[in-house]
Length: 129
Length: 156
Image (cartoon, rainbow over all chains, first blue to last red; front, top):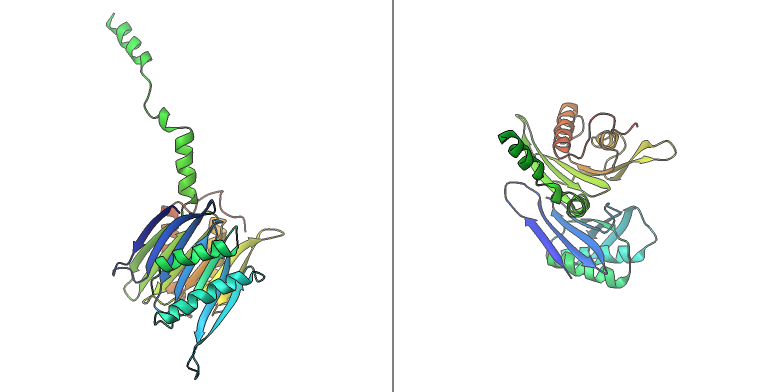
């Protein structure tokens, strides 16, 4: 997997971001992770556009184990693997100790499990939480 | 005789730079257009600080505007839609159709001809701040070459 990455976590600009580009199954895939005060944003695209947008958050409750809510707010609503993708990321964010919600944008040519698995590992390598 | 010699030498010259035209340069230009470009900058106004983040994809632009903070704000999407390419705007997170940001997203699409996803935390009922933020954003989009002035603007 060929990877080119840039990251800026300077204190001057208040939003940190990391950008990387990988080739997955011959498709150039751009991954951007941004950290806002109250949100994380992850953008993944093979299409040159934002694609489907999902919102994921941890629901605070009285139970010991947290519950999570993931919903598609724009785009494809018939791709359950995208919701699963969002779920994995918000769980990881929660596991790392942050309760910030996530905006996830996914514009892919290929929604196969293998592709999404590789994308998840790229995102986690470039995470900002 | 000297003039003939000079003309002979001149006719034998060719300008360097032709080798830069053709396949390699076109590939570089295509690669640049397809690369995601991120631009971040801050504008200090006397009563507020505006932060801007522009992420340019090949077919779309994402922009975030922060007023005095790095909170995400409300999220909007705007795009030209059929049948007559009129601009449609929708609020995706927080906000509604008359919030700060929704009209700005619409005007950005008018200027750029590309669909736009805009996040903005400018407080409502701040029309001057909103107008200033939009102006600063458009100025930077022009500098970056994402907006072409003149007849290339979206007819709306």
